Image (cartoon, rainbow, N blue to C red):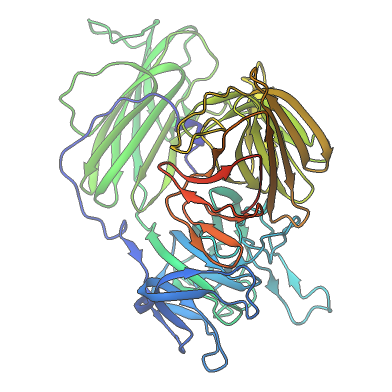
Length: 596
């Protein structure tokens, strides 16, 4: 059972022991080209990789020696799949990779289960063969059109442009087998995240996908990377084993004390009920009104390691001791956490649960985690309270433009934000107060749950892979990148078409700004055309954060830090690197394109 996300944001109390243990299970394998076999010459290690965005042979361009794995198939060096020498079972995998335009690859967990890697830049309706999709299985005995089956499309297209680094995170649970070799549990992708967006969750796979190394399934297998379909680069590939055996509760004794307690009593109490249990979830106080319950027993640690135990009492207070504890105990609201280095064997535990008010929920949340261990739930109330709500997603065809609060990564909230969507699968947010393009993204439009659920807080959040452009910076800057003394005030906006909006602003001194932003019909990015009048001086406009620019073609610059391409359309205007980002000079007119 997975640790519930709602446990992660609460207050905590810590009890930390000094010693630590080195675990084989928690070792992270950082794979390099030497980690793989079957390289027939198309795979090399290079220092730098980029794309020109319009290659004729679907290849990436490289320079120098380094640690980036590059597959560059050619006639003399046809592409080949590479296979890791090391074999893995349950793992968390993180890969930073780059696709060439039109290129195709894939990464196979255990050599058997493929997560597709594809240039899906402009897709609006992803399928199982799209970037991040779990590829279909295959049966030649079926009729044509039915041979492929059980493929799983990503929830949304969270891909980035070719030539931009992307991040794939996979939590994979290998199939399980009995001592006789019979499969007892199917393989599962606990989650797959693409560029920070969860695109699969708790996805069970019933057998190897098409192109697997073997027909049969195994407890362990290699990492395999497809190399015969096009150019791909891998900046880093880390695989963390998750084969630590989970701790178990051996026995449970309990004593129930009647009364409302927000702190421990100064004198001994007399239990009104006591007994033992097979499971925490079987507990029922059997007492009307408020109670304090003490649970004791032994916890069996299968393997030595650094463990974290979390306790949360719904609408109550708790305290916890795992092993020895010399610090004074205190009943706490919210999450109580114990982080402890533990040797294998039996360890005593004590858990205190206070229900200061008479609520129907009897149980408590108790979980364990460690490096090399899937988080496990040891106790969870049958009727546990849940602050989550059914998500409220804003659909492009119903609400293509939405006014709301927008929350920035630095937790600043913009109160005058306008988010604009398009049928092309790309979107942006604009701040009417600063006249700034705040962010762009690809995938789903908005999650308005915080805005509309219950009383709401007015905030909507992007659903897809976000490229942040501005942290509430003023639009007009001087040539020394300081805020201009011209105070523009937004005058509203006009919707011109699908993903096509013109914003306006003016100042008391007579400056007038027209800011036209259009989401491109190709789905590649945005076109921004700005015009200002009534001012005597030129300005600088921050386009995006970043500290470096690489010219990758006659018209395109790569802002690698941001993950976007910049094309300047205004003649005789060149981008500049300033103290806090990438800037463009703005005199009376400025036009540029951002591809992401």
